Image 1 (cartoon, rainbow, N blue to C red):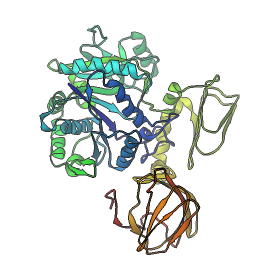
Image 2 (tube, one colour; image 1 turned 135 degrees about the vertical axis):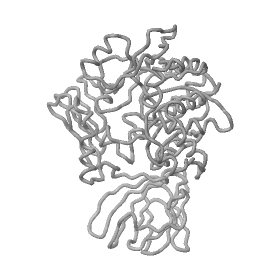
Image 3 (cartoon, helix red, strand yellow; image 1 turned 135 degrees about the horizontal axis):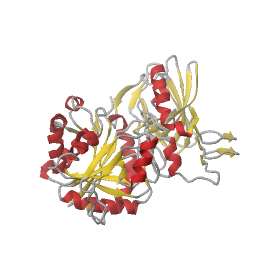
Image 4 (tube, one colour; image 1 turned 180 degrees about the vertical axis):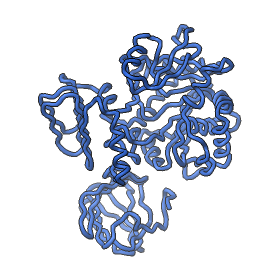
Length: 480
């Protein structure tokens, strides 16, 4: 039997604000690693090939993030089995159902391994062993979930109550039930009992088993996804389910829609496989502190940080020196446009800051100063009346749209790499320390024909400098 990994990468960015944003959520962050959480999730698949044949992953993501997903896969040299675009988030049950329909095209019935894209698993070998155990159960028609063996009382996770019958691999047959995030005293009792596991949100089952279960317990989700998949279309390597049908689909999680109901249904088989692999959902700054390497004072310091007479702090600097003096159990996170300072035990409450930003109409909840595009990124450097300065990075083989502006002229200065410039009827190359001028109203395009990133400084001038002053004539990424 074949394993088809299904990576759900559609989450939003609130709990690790200000590093994560709605347009750049945590699965795309490196968080002290050389690879992002999404890339680590994709890389984790390398260790599964000893269990069974493993297909390239099917990735489900938000429309807004499609090029980020594709670029991060490209950086790993990985070609996904497909990238499914959700018109809007509907939680994990519809996402898995759409993926199952795609996996099952042509009558195939592979075993799906559903993994969130934003988790950390430090022991890949232990994860692979647990997947091997789960694969045997899934082949027998079970809906499999993976329960993390807790090492502390945790109020930020849901729990799975293991059943009384446990086989030689520690698999609970069947699951006794699911419980919500507990208060501190209840969490302590759960851990001391030895019969409760953290709910990892990782699931495994065959396509046919899942479609049968979602059809039985949530026919509305099943039918809406079938309609959305029936008229799905390919768009430049992305698969787009029918927008109207998908938007009409109710939102629900795999846990609520199916797993909690299966646990109470004697005619269906649901099991939990224990997982001891250094798992974390990195759901708050306190969670990241728990899993990160700490110095002798218990501090996690990333970036240009000075910590004096401070203990058990989480300090991240992205752009400038951050100094903490005489602090204990503090979170201090610095980015180019925002700084968060909070007690570590209140890290879960950062969502209140994000909600305040939403109410105030502030853009800091949506995106960073650096904005990512399918061709690379740009970052504001300075701005004033009738001018602004940007740093632009174009990926190798990346190209901006053929475009023009009604209100602004642009000056481009190359600081690294080679640029191919289209300006009106001209096409020419620029290299380091060379520049050009794009007058108002002239069609133009910037491309990187080289093998290293192209970096340049753009100076815009004119009476209106908004991003909506773009008329596109041609675009390699099918943007409007």
